Length: 419
Image 1 (spheres, rainbow, N blue to C red):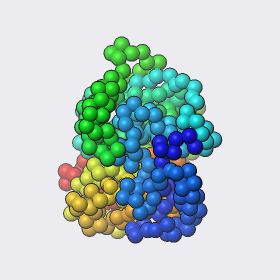
Image 2: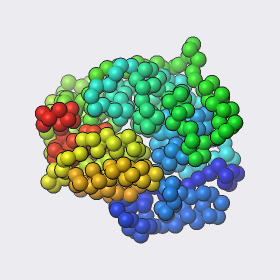
Image 3: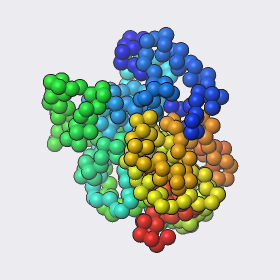
Image 4: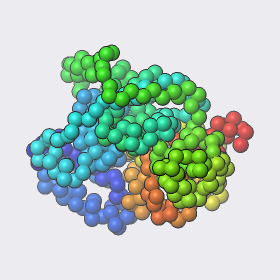
């Protein structure tokens, strides 16, 4: 390994997220945990282990401790490495063979991607968040719209997002077909990074700021593809199918395959059949069996606040299993310090440990066949969260609203006392 000092390992996919878990709670994950520890020890690599104060999901921990900084290049053997582009870094998910090359050489070999800009304009509607922006972009450009490109998210609505919102937005870049996406760093980024444990300090901070301020596209920069997405009054979004781009507003109807082009009709019909839906059906009102709030997409402190605001004073509906898994030990501690854990537990949520949890279904957490799940994660593929489980991707507020309603409900109505 060429640079052990610039290499870090995290236990996130296979550890259980059940309260009070240890390395034995998910027996199937124990060999992976042992192998990660052994490989890290042999190569002198810092491992964020289960008992580490900074333990958590890789894409949550790296930004929050200042491991990843504007202008950095970040390589991770997980497709959602693009998350950290929210800080203005260039990140790439790698396969295992490619990662071997990176570890041995500290170099990543790429075909230079084309450049794509997604201009996001307009002011979001009530209870719409960065997750809704990302889903709306997906509904417009599709799951292959960014293929072969690196995406820069720009425009007034992108700039208005918090850093946590930008991380969520960039997290779904891979679902748009692009390996890497970013939001250019600005004062919002710099203020968020100031004082992070691994961020530079003192004179080095000032030197870093001077450099980071140059990391923006020139006004006359050329983009191979330029897309504008209007999010004025954007409603909370929800997926209806088995592709993250199969998205409608929560108060919308599923598409009618008969009105689609022939090349898209079969895919839509298969997705509707798997999800137990009919074309032209209102999605609001469908019963919900399980709710998950977590993952590298939506498990940061603002996400938990957003959900807790809906849950306060309410109870999870009978028959609904609801789980929240904070994105890191730091997020969990901060949430507990301000009482968010009590709000979740009083409502009837399981307050879990930090892990990827139900996102990939690789640690014992998952749904049953036929169950309808509202999830703040990033993928709704067939069998992703359990064989035969039907996953709808949503933001934290919509997930919380479904948990207490026992059905898919427009969170705007719930917040206004209409539902």
